[in-house]
Structures are given as structure tokens and as C-alpha cells.
Amino acid sequence: MSSIQAVRMLTPGPTPIPDRVRLAMAAPIPHHRKQEFKTLLAENQVLLKKLFHTESPVIPLASSGTGSMTAAAFNLFQPGEKVLVAEAGYFGRRWVDIVKMRGLEPVILSRPAGASFDPEEIRAMLDADPAIRGVFMQISETSTGVLHPVREAAAVTRGRDVLLVADGISAVSISPVDMDGWGIDCLLTGSQKGLMLPPGLAFIALSERAWKRVETMPQQCYYFDLLQERANCLKNQTHYTSPISLLMGLHEALTMLFEFGMDAVYRKQWALTQMARTGVKAMGLELLVKEEGRCTWGLTSIALPPDIPASPVVDKAFREYGVILTAGQAELKERVLRLAHMGWVDWGDLAAGLHALAWSLPQRPQGAYLEAALEAYHTALEQYPG
Ligand SMILES: *Cc1c(COP(=O)(O)O)cnc(C)c1O
Image (tube, rainbow, N blue to C red; front, side, top):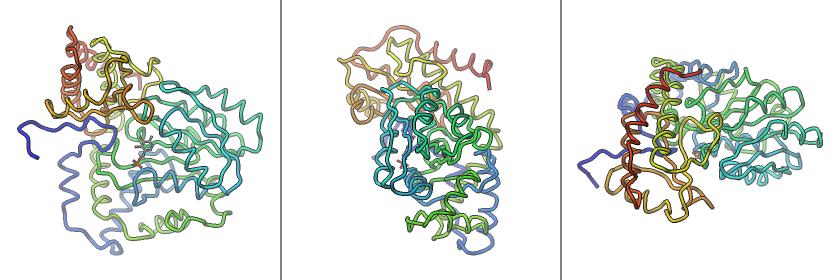
């Protein structure tokens, strides 16, 4: 269906794709076993390692993000092992489901929607049960918009024989993540959030000690065999047929990100977050994540009043204004509305999003919420603490 107005995808995946990346993916594909493609993969490795802040290979997988979560659970742990899952929402519960399917025994640390974890609690649980071999968590819980204290959790796990597995799908390339510096043992992400690419690629990197563990384990996952993938990655190949076009798009997207500079990217993401939060509050709406330091930099969740369900607002914003917002997930479906601002999104897109949100509410809010939001954006750019 064509429309006279632009469609703006302010969703936590997929996200808009820059023309440069679309064109790179439209080019004729080289054969994936020939030198031209190996050169491209070698360049991708350099950039991916810089993005993850790691010396380890960053392995691309032909799958959605959940494929890399599956690869982590099946390559790093054996059935019967105990792991801690820190869950505070829909994607945390996905960890619980995946580790159970792997036959692991999860000990679950739960937090309500909009809340985060106290790393001291993780420490206490690990102290209390030395059989726990790993900790699974999200960096950014996309169902609520909470930024979890992964750096602090890694400070707890790195001194023990416990692997920290961090789902960075809505964090990597959106807010700073330092895999080696923080001591993350397994960092993963996907293509369709901050990386300005279509869905279909996932990435996973393991620390040295995590690789040691993988090396001692019998491989039990045919497709996501990380030892095979690493051996190929070191030869600038993928084990199975490469998703060639997506990896060409990745090369262009990473080139763009480093042309801007990651600091400028994070600064923009932080300023957009301040802009969204200020605009939403100025409309008289309530933020789901109250604590400023604990909100993710790629989306803003609104806790709707009981008399305003999310779906009609989402429907109207798309129908009337061409803006794609997202309702909550699972039990939050009608109670939460998510306004995402990750990847190839700028202040103009977010202004359109705030306008569409305001005009799609049953009662149009009063006040200069757009002015306030834009002012917050510019102030935040100047005061970026990074
Ligand atoms: C989007 C997302 C996923 C799932 O990714 P898919 O690509 O849909 O498999 C997992 N975890 C987080 C934190 C996400 O934001």
C-alpha cells in the first residue's frame, strides 16, 4: 500500500535502514568462498571487534538474535548444570526457556517490569550456591526499556568460575558496551536494532575462558557449532553458506558508524532518550522506568493509565501519521507503549513520533511538549556525560 506520507519505524526492531546500506546490499554478490568476499569478512572482523571492544573473534550467524542466544546456551553449558538467570521481562524469560530447553537448571532472580537488579544480590546468590556455573542476563531489556547493571555483574563473575552471558541485542551500537574491559564472557547482538540492518544476522563473541570451556565440551548443536564457526571465522569464512548480502550491508553499516564515531552515536542515542522522556512527561504520561540512570538508550516505555489501552493508540499513530509505535509484550501488552529511537533515527523522526503519540491519545495533551522535548535534546547533546 502506498501512502503520501513517510512511514517511520520507531520500533525496537526492525529499524530504518540508511540508503547507503540498502544500496550496498543491492550490489551483485561475490561468491562466498572467493577472495573478494574473504577480504570483506576480514574488514568486518576488525570493525566488529572494535564495536564489541574485544580481542576475540566476533562470529556472525545467519539467524535472528534468538539464534545467538541459543548458540550461547548450547555451546557453553552441559545438561544438568546450574545457572542463574536474572530476568525482569519478556526477554529475560526467553533466557529461562532456552536454558531449560538445553537441560540446564535455572535459579531465577526476578524483578518486576521496569525494575533492574542489584548486583549485590547476584553476588549473594553466587556465594550461596557454588554450583552455579553461569549468569544469563540482558544488557537492555527491550520489553521494558531497563538498562541492567551488566558491568557491575561482570565485576562479580570475573573473579569466579562463573561465565557471564550478556544479551546485548538492543544495547550494542546503542549505548557503550566494553566486552573485554568489563569482563563479559559471552556478548551477543542482532542486526535489526542498532546496527541499521535488516533482520537475519546475529553476532556472538566469547572470552578466552569461555572458549576454553567450549573446547572441553562435546558439540551438541549441529547448526550453531561455535568451534566450527570460530575455525572458519579465523580464515575469514563462515562454516555454512554466508548470508552474503547482509554481510555486505554490515560492512557499509559499520563503516558508517565508525565514520560518525561511536562516541557521537552514543551521544545522539543518549540525547534522543532525554528528548523522549522529557516529551512523554510533558504530555502528562508516566514513564515505566523511573530511574534516569537505568533507562536504555534505544527506547522509551510509557506506563499507560488503565483507561488507555495501547493497541488503539498504536493503530491510530500508524493509520493517521505513518508512525509505527509498539505495544507492550505479554502481560504488558495493553499497559505499556514503546516508543523506540534506535539506529538510523534522529531528532526529526522522534519529534514525528512524539507528535503522532500525542495526537493518537484519546485526549490530546495540552502544553508545549514538543518544544520541551527538542530543548531537552539539545541540552543533552551539550551535557552528554560519556
Ligand atoms: C529483539 C531482541 C531479542 C530477539 O531477537 P530476534 O531477532 O527477534 O530473535 C532478544 N533479546 C533482546 C534484548 C531483544 O531486544
